[in-house]
Image 1: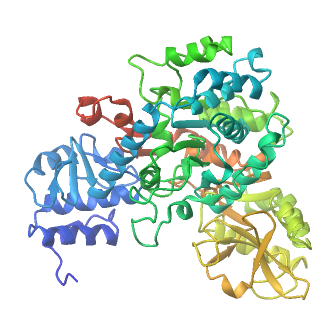
Image 2 (image 1 turned 30 degrees about the vertical axis):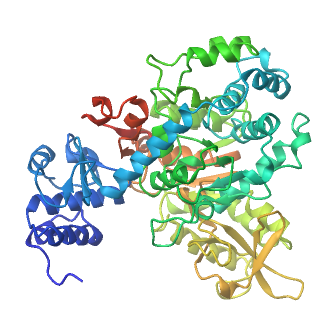
Image 3 (image 1 turned 135 degrees about the vertical axis):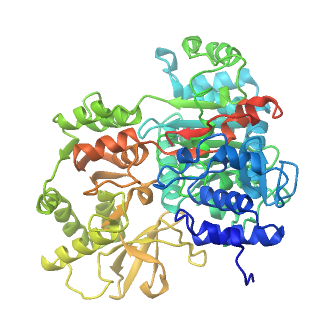
Length: 623
């Protein structure tokens, strides 16, 4: 234990941007290198803080104000710091085994530099490794799976064909664009062509809720005539990425890695935008040599709470909009209009044919307000967003309250819906009721944050007699797991409902892994919260028939384009946005920037090339 604080770290305490962990890390490096230079302490603290804010690295060719925009006081000069770092202990180049790594102008924690390199290397290996599948057989299988495919340009067909040609396919698109349906066709096609049995296919997602939805959606997709023959040879469960990899609490190590690879030939990951870059790196490390990886997700959603925006990097604008000539020519033999697919730039990026964007929504028609406002938000058009909100729509409502009373008047239908949900008598009925509507908020604290809203709604329901028991637990209570509990098979984000069993005992019910229900005594759940309202972040991986999105009554740094888009697209049938035009405009115009070099590494054919290691703003814009 360090008993003294380096004088260089003491100076950093005058800068309120740093957390205790950042200062502790800086102090450790100063003592480890027996160097108390101000620049070493500053570099260590900045890198630690950047990682905590979601960045993989700090690019010192940029003003620090662009990396830490929320800081309101003057920051050190990044260019001067960069020139001063040479020769400092505990800091070296990519090949040096030092706690801090300076790669070009980018400053990393050693572990995160390795994560980024491992992920880039793994994805490039997968994308450039030709599949053993015969392309003629693949095209014949496409004809069977897409009997009407020649009638229009079908990106679902392109993504299915992509998954057969290499060991990597990345399928991105908004809600209702058919990502899971496409995944089902990929499973059927690879089972036909390569005989991959169900027990060799892994289904995973970052949260338990998203994993359960993937499993159920895939089972439903196999009900269509073209796929029913394979419906009995599917995976028997879906799991979280943490469980799949065997991630260990408070440890970077996993049960499955290069030395102990996963026992699967095909791995699907849904809601991939929620997966952090370190977790994605661990996943590609754990894949066996013959395995295929299929990533599904919406790159415009909120990124992982942890560091990185891997899916947004992978779906970089350099190749997401085009395909190689060879890909288009081969697909055109079964689907002539494939020649009309957009062309990738030259030289063709390695991931060009692996990344497919589904741009047609099947959930909403041309009159949908949800579809129109989602499109306006995604493209960053604040005027169009406000114009769509102001128009009358069957599925979209905008309320601009001037008082707190007007907020709760707008939420009155929600309270009525919750009252009905509390009267459910079976798990099926309860989950159907609670899954039909939800209140979302950007914040955890405050009157319009999760804590304040849950407290107020609980009070309203008690005043109206919908809840008669005192205390936290009562029949009908919806709860959310807030910390992983592997001993119970429950994970952060899992939702449960308290109901009495046949003996009259109160139990908390959760969906079972293989269908059906699991239930536990409330006393066994040590990390739960009520979930009348939930944060937008927690809602990822979930969908509700009706969504009420409540903006705060003042500006907040968490209000971003990605957050607004994610909130609105949780709604399957109706959405109500409650908040003023200024805050909505602020959301649309502010994008999240996560700094990394992953995108450059995926484009570069040779990592020694300046494109991969040179200067420039490599923040991921829009995720």
